[in-house]
View 1 (cartoon, rainbow, N blue to C red):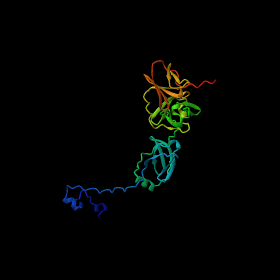
View 2 (cartoon, rainbow, N blue to C red; view 1 turned 30 degrees about the horizontal axis):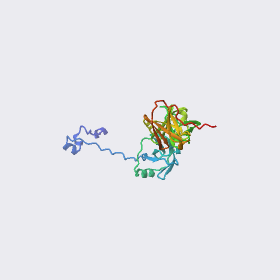
View 3 (cartoon, rainbow, N blue to C red; view 1 turned 180 degrees about the vertical axis):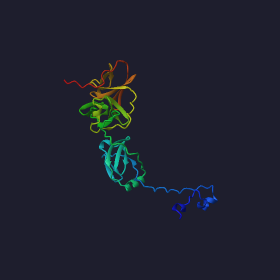
View 4 (cartoon, one colour; view 1 turned 90 degrees about the horizontal axis):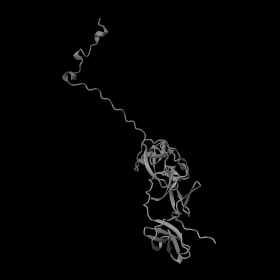
Length: 293
């Protein structure tokens, strides 16, 4: 009686069990069964980024989908909006200043992607508010104020004298370590000592991180002084008498001190030109008030 083991033959030792294709092509290797690639799993939409200019109201609207309160302190600045399904980051100079919950949908992101926005970076770090303390050192902040008629700006009870030439001008005050830089437009007006600790500067009303470079100081030019014309029509500068005229008695004029001349101005109108005959230093720069009798 045959045992069960005798009914089985090895494919290795018995050549009759090899397929015909293998016998006709002994040198051909049998290719393994190709593996099917796993189906592509579609991931969620990628984040996007877009630029937006903060209006005077401080509210930025994302294509009619969601309103973002950025703050009136950032009015006029251009911020970057990092938009995803879960959160929206508001960045200024690559620093997150605010994070809010997102209400946009996948369809909204796809529609925004067709409007020329760019692909977003990896999820930025947590929000860094303007009044936060950075381990890498304090960040300069700036505020905007209008100088009064005397050219003075008051910040937290401190009077910062900028000069009568900037009276009524909207100036930007940049608070740095130990210094305050006053500028208007692209012109640096004055640099003053900073009476506030740098950590307290970030809590001043209207303070925002300084994002622009400090304007270059203007080149040194001629000095100018102010004088009140006396009754006889004469003003005194550096020990030299300058006759302006009795018709200008009581008027406060500006005297431009050049190397070889004195120019007397009433506003932008030139009243007289005098040759400079003295080399004495100038001690008084402001006009004297008339004496009361």
